[in-house]
Image 1 (tube, helix red, strand yellow):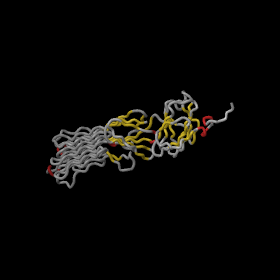
Image 2 (cartoon, rainbow, N blue to C red; image 1 turned 30 degrees about the vertical axis):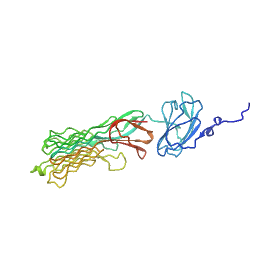
Image 3 (cartoon, one colour; image 1 turned 180 degrees about the vertical axis):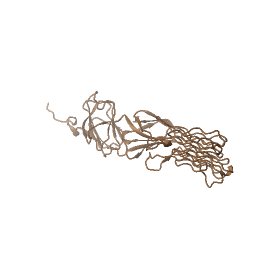
Image 4 (tube, rainbow, N blue to C red; image 1 turned 120 degrees about the horizontal axis):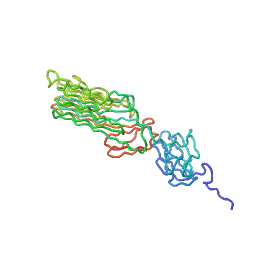
Length: 409
């Protein structure tokens, strides 16, 4: 019998595909013999190939808005693609590809492509680079003529400098479909009970990176201060305690205290250490400054400032905290110690016999990675689920509370 009708499956090229009029803007499952316009202006899109396929089945995909170089199109399948179980991606502007099923060994392969350069379907990398900023919780302030809380330890791969004057660390190489631990350290509580020190902040963690909680400030005639991410300041009566008790490559030590002829009026506790300098010593008492790390974009983003020491009535103002969330110290009969700022790892301001010390500020974990390398992520546990912000060609995630894991895909 003569062939009287030519079906679309027998026609070579684009005429053999039924193009869908509705533009796809979110993840979807493709159907054989259909073509799709995919708009990634607002987000990346994952295309799942048909779960069962026959040799010769075709799916066509076009980068509708010319934005795949910013937000990629990921293609995934139960069977192989290009002979591999890996996903592939279209990450070039105006990419267009028709993919045909060739059988179980090679699976889906490119039949036709446009604007692809040298590769029609690029393997999604199994690893990708992530820059990090990990800041621990700041230390609480000591009480009664006491020392300011030390800032939380700071470790970063972004920029040129990390905490404690160290060179910035290397970025991390992460793998998709792998769980990575994230913990946000809380700040330590201040103590106005002599001779107790303020409590140290808790550690913050991302993957293999741990930043140490800041040391609490020394209480009046206290027993000394423990090593922290940055060191707490010393009480004015403890001016023989060696101040350099920060953690190497994370923060600096706290300052020594000072006492004049009339302790009730002229004392100053030492300031807590910050990520970029020692806490104020002797008659200064200010908190050590934190470090500017602009991983979220812009300028002037400081973290891990030390808390100010307490001071007597003869001074014109309280001892300031360091840039990066450090709280100001108390001034006798005038003001309480100020809490370290939330999510900066700032150390707390010290107290006084009549004024309360502050509590340390909580830490943070911030991640920055190329937007084109990650389709999505999921978090577990008590972590907040951040909304990615876009900075140039990168995405930025800010974790502010809790503990759990993050998994990228």
